[in-house]
Structures are given as structure tokens and as C-alpha cells.
Image (cartoon, rainbow over all chains, first blue to last red; front, side, top):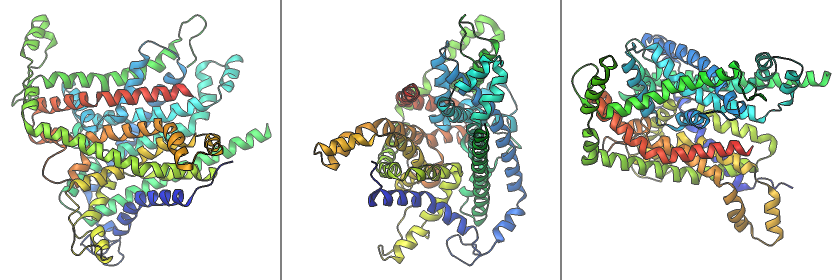
Length: 269
Length: 306
């Protein structure tokens, strides 16, 4: 028999969640503050959102960041899924230790080191820095997160379906797309979302690898924040939080719906 | 995608699955580090790129020998002799150590509470702890500036409660860096701890209780040792990146002694001294090598157990 949670358990989880969410909630509330002084409450207002809408440089940066995030997340999802399949299904191969080391090291590597290293590579290769170098850098970092997420899903699932398909003469590639991919899809989608938000959010690696004409949103926000707190920053941050929250809710609903469809199919069969 | 067949040969498709990500990571992760190592042995010059020597492989063997002869350990001697750098390294390690200790102390009760929650609620709690990680890092640090500044909410609240007479200075202190680090890395501590606590078999604790072991002793003798892998994974996942952290000390810390991530940033962006910045990166990497290898081992073992 399991013991239920004690008062201490409930309190520590509640306090922990409050600690995690309170600063974000405060930020969102203050983005609707009418006062120019960030700390004085001057009543509800949406004026900072209007000013944000007229801030062409900020919108331009947001557009660049969204494009980089979408592109690098898609590339990272393909590469990361391949890497996960290689780690879980390829068994032993030469260089496996080095391969898994290259997957796990970027997860904990301080960003200043990764950023500097990538920049020096781009300089050595003599490529123009900007949109594409930031995209390549973000792909490299986020594919490792995708690989870890997809890998845990691959480890958990039942291989007999794949084996049955192959026994019936289904070629490996077709088996992957008709059996494996639908089964691991929630993890692949979660990996994409994670890669997207990590890219949208990155300041350090983007600062190193960017060039003229590719100022991303975090770089823009950072240069504003260094000059002091501005109500407009609260507004853009709230918009970013809303975008991520929306994405997460949609992903959760899709996963739920997928489960329902599969359950229904299983019931029919 | 299939395993090696009975013949021991791998199909081309299976090879590509390994080769494509391996090639990408080799070019964009492994090779860059070799370049960092090389440039850390170079001299800074006012040119484009701002270092010498540069390797020109078209020059043949002679060019390679000239290149090797021009490499020097000057930058490393500088790092070892200038207190600025030594203090910076030690400070980063100290702050990361303190932050990790606080994270363990705060994270353990949270993870323990989550593992004790009703089964149906647990996935929701995991998601709730993970969600803040998806909202931008920069935003979460920025949110704390609002709270910690002189006229910020923390001081206002403490004043209103009558706990302090006049506003305290929070921002631009080590306390602010620690708060920022603990806040940002809490999910990385809680989730691995929860994963190991959740697997814990309750019958072990019942057996201990049946044999007359008091609850606190059973916790210390059974729960804590069994959750150790989660604690170590969480600690490494927090400690390693915090040592090299740039955004947190830059926005919340003071203008005094810097953490090593800031030192590297300043050498690179302000002083434009690429070789010294590279040497700072190499020494930082060497210092973190042991924890990184430990983390990799732990990951590999966790996957083997399944």
C-alpha cells in the first residue's frame, strides 16, 4: 500500500511551484501597467503592447528569431531522431562511445564555450555570418535535446510490431515510416517544440555566431535590458510566454487526441 | 534501421542513420574545439582574423612546420599569472557549488513530494515543473530584475510586512546571482531526483517499518541511498552549466569580480583578444572535463538499466 502525501509533501510541492511561477505571473501583470515607472502600479493599460507594435526593430528581430527557430528546430528534429535511432537500434558499432559523447556533451556544455567554438569554425571556413550560421549553430545544440527525448521513447516501446511488419516482408524504411514513426510521434513533436523554444530563447550562442542583419530577438531584448528595465520589454516577454504556452497546449491536445484515436482503433480491432 | 543481420553486415540505410548525425556533430561540435585549442596557442594581432599564425595547408609541409613553430603557450602563462583570471575561475566554481547545494536542499523536498502525490496527478506535476524551462531563460532572469531592484517588489513586500526598515540592496550582489541560478536550474534538479524517487519500491520502507526502524532512519538508510543516482545526475546537470554561466551574473550580478563566462565574453567582444578568450575556454573545459565524463557515464548506465 502506498502512503499518501503528508502535509510536508504538499507544502513543499506548492511552495516549489509558487517559486517557479510567481516571477512569471508578476512579469505578465506588470506588462499591463499604465505607469512608465516599472515599479509603480498605475492601473490597467495595453499601451506597451501598442508601443511594441510600433517598434519596427523589435518586430524585425522577432521575425528573424521565429524563422531561425522554425528552420533549426525542423533540421534538429530530423538529425536528432536519426541520432536517437542510431543510439537505440544500431547495437554496437565502431565509435559508439564517441558518438554518444557528442550527443550528451552539448547538453551540459557551457554556452560561452560552444558559441566561441562555433564562431571560430565559421571564421576558419570563411563563411558570411548571419541567418544561416545562427541556424546551423542552433541545430547543433538542439538536435542533442531532440535525440535524448526521442531516445527515451524508443527505449520504452514494444518492438514486436516492427518485427511483425519486417517478418511479413516490409522493408526497413517503410517499417520506420508506417510503424515506428507514428508510435514515437509524440516524442518527435515534443522534441521539435523543445528545439523551437530553445532556439527562440538563446542569447549566448546567437551573439557569437550572428552577423550583420541578423539581430535575433534575445540579442535585441538583451541590449534593451542592459540600458534599464522598460515596460515594453515586459510586453514582448508576455507575448513570448503566450506563444510558448499556446504551443504547449496545442501539443498536449494533439498527444491526447492521438491516444484517443489509437485507443478507439485498438477497441475496434 | 534494423540491427546488423546474421551476416554481420549493415545495410546502407542503417549506416546512413549513424553517419548523418555523426558527421554533423563532428563538423559542428568536435572540429570547432580543435580550432579553439589551436587559436589558444596563437598570438593576438590587429588583423582579420585577429590572430597569428594562420594555417595555410596549400603551403605544404614547410607551412605546417612554420605554423607549429609559431605556436606558443603565452596565453596560458598569462592566465596562470594574472589574479584576475584565477579569481574569476575560483569565483565561478564557488558560486556554482553554492547554487548546486541550495538546489539540492530545495529540490529534494519538491521531488519527494511529487513522488508521493497521487499517481494521476504526477504527470501534471512533472509538466508544471518543466514548463518554466520552455519560457525563455532571458525572460526569467529579467523577471527577477523587476523583483530584486531597490524599489522592486521584494523590498516593497518586506517593508509592508515591517520586516525591514529601509530597502535592502539585492540586485548586483552574489545573492542575486544565487537566486537567479537556483530559479533557472530548479527543473534540472527536481526532474532527475523525481525520476529516481518515483521508482522507489514502497515495500522496502514497509519492511524497514515492520522491523521497527523509525521513519526518519528508514528515510536515511533506504530512500536517500536509492535516490543517489538522481541526486548526482541533477547536481551535475546544474553545476556544469552554472560554472560557465554568462546571462545570470551579467544581468543580476555586480560590477565587481566577474564569473569566468563573463571574463571570456569581455575578452572576446570588448578586448577582441580571440587567443586569450580561447585559452580561457580551454582551461574552463579542462576543469569541467571530470564532471562532464561523470555525467556521460551516468547517462550510459541509466540507459543500460532499462
